[in-house]
Image 1 (cartoon, one colour):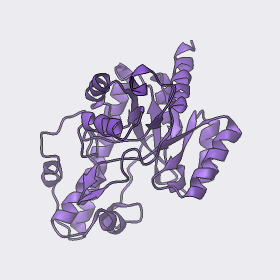
Image 2 (tube, rainbow, N blue to C red):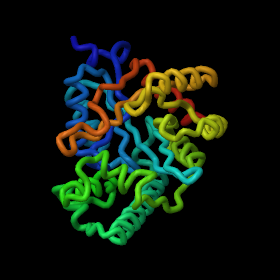
Image 3 (cartoon, rainbow, N blue to C red):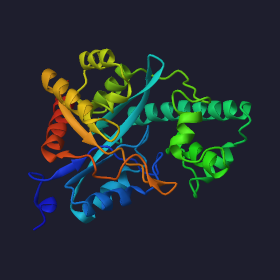
Length: 294
């Protein structure tokens, strides 16, 4: 019998993937099938500020007999830059958490409008209707629209030749149209995840170039650090694995798969970054411990 069906004692997991419920291009069920076809035993769905794709992913996992980890990636700001915090084994039906996610999505919508206004000020004529049309379907209120959707319009209208150019020239943190409206801090995101019964993990810390912040967030209650990520160098991965070990935290891994855009995989193929499923079991145990506290 396939080990993915008979248990979670062996195998690997990709703990960072996105679907079209946020800024990925694949339906949630497709991410699960891709993980199964890649030989993984588990996959996490971690869409930005939404759990809209979770039920579909869990159902596909039941059909295939593989573990789907309920997750989310919360958008926060610290020191003027985006900081992302992953939550695992959250209660996806928690009313307070769902209300908080809705608040984050409203800030994200504001940010999109501000970016489009800034782009128009630069002579780049793009409308929100054009951005929404990239989804090729009706936009739901519990789904998110992000910078990759804007980047696709920039490419289609000839303002950029690739996703990399769109982010470098306009949308990345050094881009001409970058904006960052007030958001919650990562410390609050950790608290929200814990209050929803989940384990909190700092996403891709190597991108922030702020290890003092990482240390501060560890003191704020982080349960893990994403050490192995598609945008981390081998040296980054080793550094953050060692940091996690020093503080007794979990070191996780994820591809940050977003599907195909412009004929290229964005960020990396699903399963290209993975960790032993025992990390999944430890995340589950952290979640259980958090939920058992009065």
